[in-house]
Image (cartoon, rainbow, N blue to C red; front, side, top):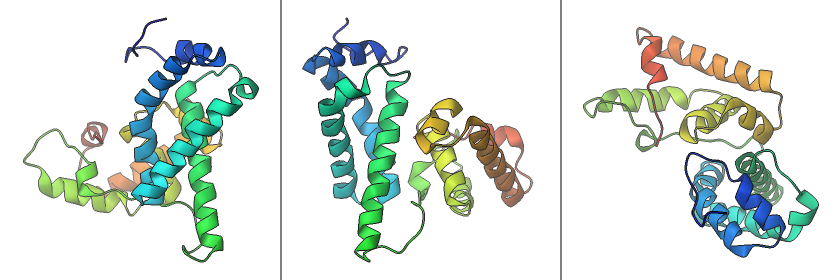
Length: 196
């Protein structure tokens, strides 16, 4: 097994080594997934310490339960699902203590989250950020996972614990609503919106 992760491959080989107790393979998985899992947790929890705690809790729990978990079809999707569950549990705990109001996790986009192909389009960045924040929470989550984390729809369905068609429907509704909000902006422009 290689010592480093190749961006063109998945993490399955490293996970197989983890199942045999290989701590270095787990360190590779941690090193690769931690930044994007942290961004996802932070987008849901909107607090650095809570996000870091959620991600670290997931990595610790998975290490100790690896034998029970066994083989994974998608290591990345499994970790995203675990972080989502952990963040939701943390939100429920905060809400039960009446620290947060009830409701679904609310991923908010800021202008800094959005990169548009040309640098001189600052106003469009602000507009798009405003439009994205007008979408319902689940549509924003699909857009976040699809364009920010670049996950395939099948993995998004697994993470959000809904069926594949529901994810497609949410993405379609989000893009349709964005087109309605943005008026004359052509669809190809939406396709080339990338989140960092």
